[in-house]
Amino acid sequence: MDTRISEIADGIYRLSTFVAGIAPPVGFTFNSFLVLGDEPLLFHTGLRKMFGSNRDTLSRLVAPERLRWIGFGHYEADECGAMNEWLAVAPDAQVAHGQTGVMVSLNDMADRAPRVLKDGEVIDLGGKRVRYIDTPHTPHGWDAGVMMEETTGTLLCGDLFTLLCGDLFTQLGDGPALITGDIVSPAAAAEDLFGYSALNPTMGTTLRRLSELSPGRLALMHGPSFEGDGGAALQALADEYDRRAGLHRAGVIERPEFA
Image 1 (tube, rainbow, N blue to C red):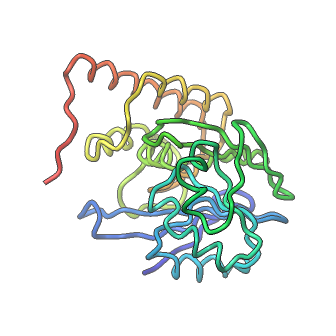
Image 2: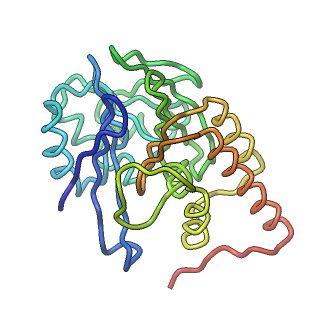
């Protein structure tokens, strides 16, 4: 298993593992993001079975035991499957997540007590600052949230943009680490294929709230990260999901069926 490193912003590194057997023939990428600072943060732990590859790759940038914070978009195997493996190798590390995620999953599943983050709360990493933002049910988890690294303007999207920003802006295949241009059309195509999002009445509002942050980079859970007008991309994504929600209410769209 090969995990590759790319610096997508100053002091923010994408650790990307390509799996050819998912969504063949193009394959699928799983990304974690290391935010360096006095107190380094890992956003996405990766799948438990990917831990060895991710740990060895991360060690080329920083000693794993120096990790201080572990964050992710929501409770799901690719987002936090290796959470306890990272806690074991980093004795001072603490999982940080929103109140819902901590209450319904992490208080029980994390080997050390997690830190509860309020909506809008900031963690100062020393040289970097990450702000936690609740995004419930967007794209598909009750406990969903994102983190904005404020010194570089990088939005750590989780599955919000995986096919949409993490899982919302997920792009298929083994492409470049950082792209510009249209990311909404590929996200819509991925939504057509997987039907991964939980369409809900507040999805457009949630995405437009994020657009007001005007991120210059979107760090996506699956596929390449995006550099450009992140606010405009989020607005366009909100419009696309509002359109889909209207079609669903009208009974025009059916969810995809998997063989």
